[in-house]
Image 1 (spheres, helix red, strand yellow):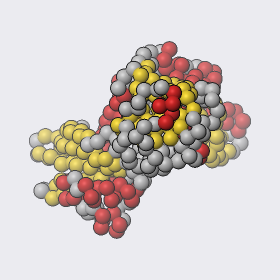
Image 2 (tube, one colour):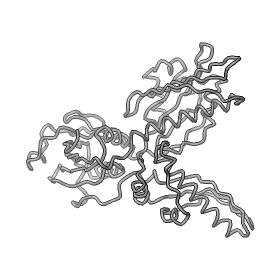
Image 3 (spheres, one colour):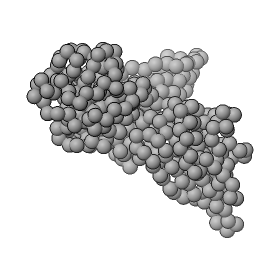
Image 4 (cartoon, helix red, strand yellow):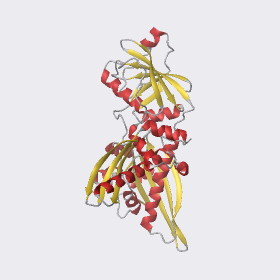
Length: 402
């Protein structure tokens, strides 16, 4: 599905096209360019001087976090080192979440929002690959295999405790930890998580409103004359990518505290999840294609929502109206990357690209012969884009703590 691709956007209630000109709004998920919870603490000769210095510290730290969020870790060594004045030019605005001052000290927590188009230009000029599409959150079930017994909710479970001590996820692949309350205990146990019980995994994913579940199994191997080794198997169930597996082993450093070792390993696993997602969503500016979409509509509100979802995708460069009838429209969507990336990115916005005539989700208005295509002489659509849920934008989420 490269070059010019023909698809059908079918929805139970889509809409009249709001305006006939090509969309000019900035593309991409601007949430990816917002850095929250930036702590600052500076002392100077006066409160005003401390505040000024703290704001520069904050924007510097926020900018580094932004670059590390968007760019693969293998390229961190090539990240641009900018002056404070240049970083200030890239800041759209900032927000003070909380602050305390004294005569010579300023303490605050800040949020910085950066200019998406300017940051993209900076990264492209530096020949740095980057991604900006958020994944839908996944739930993590940390299962510890110990002496032939699988532990999940049982105490002690130092593997689960290690995940609970991790800092909030700051990347594009949000993770959520379960509470471990009675509802969780009744919903799934360690053996069911280990075996990949589809019904149980689906139930707990639904409870937390996530796209899928990672079962993170760990087995600790110890010996008197060798450092401890943790064998980790991470299996992902659900989500648009289907089943995913990561298997790796981690070795404790000499004299490393066991709890610190487990926490370091859990952090390494989260980084691997992040890097795999980021690597699959790198923007490919040198590969552009067009998706021709037929829209069946009878309600303006749903189409406005769907068009907003499409506009949020960094892969979509613009939308052009091809034809319009009383109940249907044909629209060209120009995008970059390959069809697999497009499918996955659309799925994060609850939009599924499927063969024409295949219904699903809330799109029940599919027609065998599209009127707009027939009346304008456009090719018969081969694909349809169906609405599969109600989430308009998977917001970044901090892990829920057990």
